[in-house]
Image 1: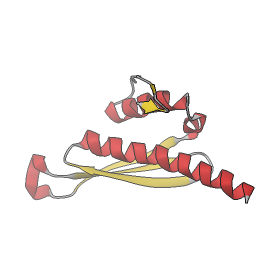
Image 2: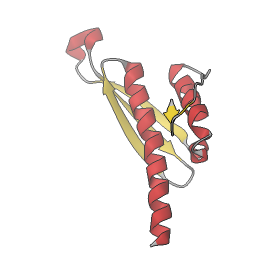
Image 3: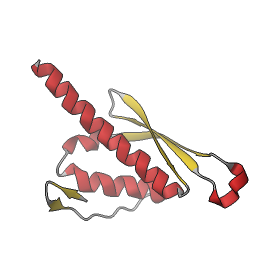
Image 4: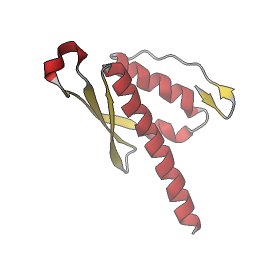
Length: 109
């Protein structure tokens, strides 16, 4: 991952591949954005969008997250469940960081 021209390489081990992705992403970003440590994945759902396509079906991954004060949901869609999970997970982290920036600027106004 690259943030402000600095490359951060991490890995994560967890209870399954999505948990490992979450841990690795959190490790990579926490140095630059400490607020990501507050994010907790509270629910994870996978839905097949077109069952007739069998293993070529697209899936929708729904992730619900919380920082202890607010909750939000994000979605990823792909024919690859890991890619869809990654999309939803990244969106969850981005959402938290953007909301924190908005709260900061609203206090200044």
